Image 1 (tube, rainbow, N blue to C red):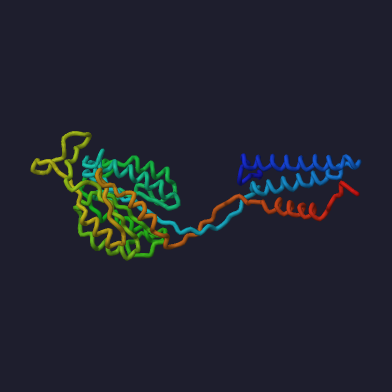
Image 2 (image 1 turned 135 degrees about the vertical axis):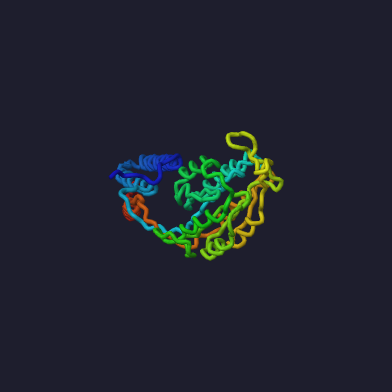
Length: 330
C-alpha cells in the first residue's frame, strides 16, 4: 500500500525551508568568522547541522500528514431527507411564468440540489398518479440528470391530484422494507418540497395531510404561476387546449390549498413567478430544519501517521538542546 500525503507542499512550506536554510547558513558563517582569529575550527557543528536538518525534515513531514493504510471510522450524522414533488400536469406548460412553469421549476430545483450536498434527496413526479422518478440519494449528478429530463409527457394527461404524491412519500417513511401509510417516526428528518400550481382536481386531501402531520414530515409548498393565469399550449406546440365546449382552457395559480397544506404540517408556502421569486427563502427555510434523528455511517479514511515523525523530531530536539558543543574556547 502506497504512502500518501494529506497536504501537498506549496509555496509557504518552500519559503519556510529556504528561510531555515539561509538562517542556519548565516549562523555557520558567523561562528566560523568568530572562531578563525582564535585558530579554532567550526567542524564540531557538522553533526549538529545534520541533526537539525533531520528533525526539521521530520517536522515538515508531520505537518504534511503522511498517510499509510485505511482505517474505518463511524461517522454520526443528522442529515435530512428531502423529497422533491413536481407537478407534471399539462397546466405546468403554461407560459405565464417564462419560459414555462415547469422550466422555471427545473432551473430552481437545480440550485436547491447543489445547496444540500450532505442530505439525501429524492424526486417524485405526479399528475393524477405519482411515480418515484429518483429514490433518495446522495448522488447530486444523477438527480440533476433526472430533473433536467422532466416534461409533462412523462405522465398521463390527467388533472392534478395532490393525494398520490403525499401518500407515496408516506410509504417511504417507515423502516426499510415496509410499505405502509401508517404514521411512523421517520429515521431522519423529512422535508417535502411540493411544486405545483395548486389546481387540485383530486379527492379530499385532509385525511392524508393529518397522517403526514403526525409523521413529523414538513411540507414546503411552492405555488408556480400567476393569479391571472394563462392558456395551456397543446401537444407539440399546436393550438391551445380546449374544454368540452370548445373554449380555451385557462390555468391559474390557486394558493389557498397550498397554504393550508404547509400550515398543517409545520412548513411554509412560497410563490414562484417572473414578478415574485421566493425560492431563495425556501432554501433558507429548508436549511433551518435540523436533523431530528442521527444516523451512523462507517467510512474508510486514510490513517494519518503524523505522530511518528513528530515524536521522533521532538526527541531529536531534546537531544539537540541537552548536548552543547563548544566551538570557541578561552
